[in-house]
Image (cartoon, rainbow, N blue to C red; front, side):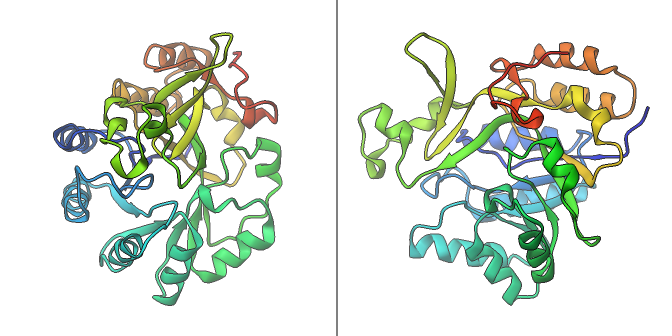
Length: 299
């Protein structure tokens, strides 16, 4: 059964060397994704690429037939962060994903349609309707939202729903840098050590079990969230797109697996088995089922 749902590539959450990023998005031009989110959302100190670089990538992806959305930072902590946010809002041709309410306000004041990111933590219909009235044309539910709650959410007719379907879950953000702390460094003298961990720095419990991953100021799930075996459940729901979060290795194969599953070319169990080959950590789907997020997948 073919499922008429689009695939999107979320913004890059990690700090990769400049040439690695440029090479990655050159490959994306040929991937079966409909929308690509670009920009730094985690830490303003990361400087391998500037806004002009992201805009250059955006233009090439747009020429390749992709919808491009510029993502904003999740935490605005300084005047320079605010200036950067204003430049993104004023970029011109590309839609913007608002990841905090300061961005929402600026986009509303400019009368610009926007994407409401998952970090806005929209859990109730009134907030969703308010965002729609302010110009939101797409929303990403919080990653903790279970399928039953999502199915019951009355989504405005003018709004698309995009679900986080693959990747380490972005759980929390902080003004502190956890990676710097791990290396006993101050945030302002972090030596950009997160560049050494292209898929986040794994954290284990005292018993040696995988628990979380740290990515600069961001805390992520230790396991990799995946809904590839739940795609049939999306039929008849408000979901119009699935977000795949970039990882350093095997991302082209991840995209191809999801595309084949949506097109009915791969059964759920086979897709999950095939995807396991490319995971940087064990898979989980607990939040989608309304249980503990780190619960392992059973197919």
